[in-house]
Image (tube, rainbow, N blue to C red; front, top):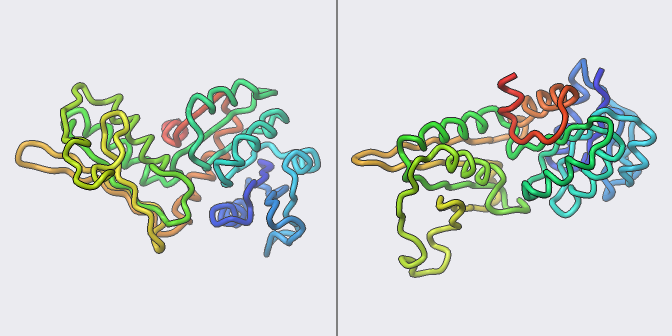
Length: 259
């Protein structure tokens, strides 16, 4: 049994993680933390109540893994606390720069691993991998990412990870129309590593991304849609099971999918 604590447990993603952990025979939910809902019952299937303080919850429950789906303003402090206690971290909260993640990983005790995934949906990981392969042959590319209107960061972590993979794969960086063509500022989106990224935020959306490639006489569209947050749960479970055998900093679910 892997002992799991969920941080941000009353949120949209956190509550789904709680339900998933409770349903897995080899995972044990030992604690939940959500300061805004402290003292409230976690829900059906457990007698736990939400704690307000992460450090105290870790000391009381002795988890092996902390799963964090909170907010960019809180996640760094949560990671620091967990790693200081030797607790492996599975982080789905995006918006933390890579250099900060690298710094955090150096603070780990007891061989704890810091794992961060921009996206836990298996299909989204495949979409990013396919985009990386396509970029070798079709370097003209733009990204449109679409998320719910309460998402805290733009561009999304998935879009930034996709850009990083494309940048690794492209052998040439083509010239593309940029700011000089804009009639309205921002019409061409954000330029990240010479890839234009367009962020859409609307109620009714969950998480969606389309990677558009253009070439002579042809286009290629690679798209992934998460229409329900349950789409992320197989990836979360895979990460929990894998992180206990890892150390250091690991970014991207594909690292565990390949094992």
